[in-house]
Image (cartoon, rainbow, N blue to C red; front, top):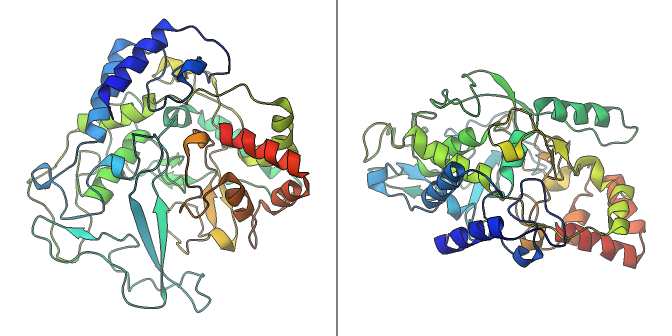
Length: 412
């Protein structure tokens, strides 16, 4: 991140009045002057929060090396490689997952013992390691890609009240169609955070997952600690052990725990504080079409946040995140053939993607296979997908209405 841009933008937030367009509650700006600004802090947060945003931003882009505790195995060397903070979206890093599948090439086999170190590819070695974790040369092992999700507006997602997520799940359960989202109840797998400002979860607690493409992580500090450990081999007080590897190494070039709790929390606070980019005032007809074709059933426009969330700008508001934070069955076409690794998520289930910063996006869906909003919508319609009827409703629209809807989604 170019720090002059951050400081310049932050100053403008305080100096400029709202003038046209619309701005999410707590967003970085209400001004069309800053329509293309992103990766900037929430408006009117305290100077202490701005300082933590800037410090966390620096850590987010630091390339980690052996002396920092990198490895022994790793996938990427810094957070921005998968969550590119120069555009607030997706970096060049691609995580690859493996699964032993049945003869149909899709159904996960009950016997995954061939993948004795788990489903994640770790292609790089350092700190004495000699053997990466790579896909075996077996035609029955399916390899799929996952792109790092956007980091824009993620503090809003963390701030959403658990009861709100459960409420929306109950509303969907009462629907008469196929749309029935699932709350991903997951086990908290980290050690307690020494700083309980945002949560006091204990190992083994059953919590609502909301982060990651399959919502397997409950909080942003755990998300950061998990990524440091599993993508970079950087241990922390939240995740103090190295993941198993073929060489049996239990440490790296930096003996003991590699990062401090504040290293984790600063990165997490940076992500918490990133604003939702300014949005133009929506077209009423396009919004009505969004409801008409049932996009809004899963991409719920707003969810209410906790009154006691520690960042005041995100507390007790209607967060404009366009997601229900629930898992949905997206059919065979979007299956990754992974079972048992993402809480209650089955191979065909994905968390509803938040429609935030869509106008900056270049790739869509979990693996980037879609290069346009239209491609992404059409990919929702595969065998067994909950979104089948929605795609059919979209296809029944006139060309003009389809374009209006695509323009609306692409403006978010």
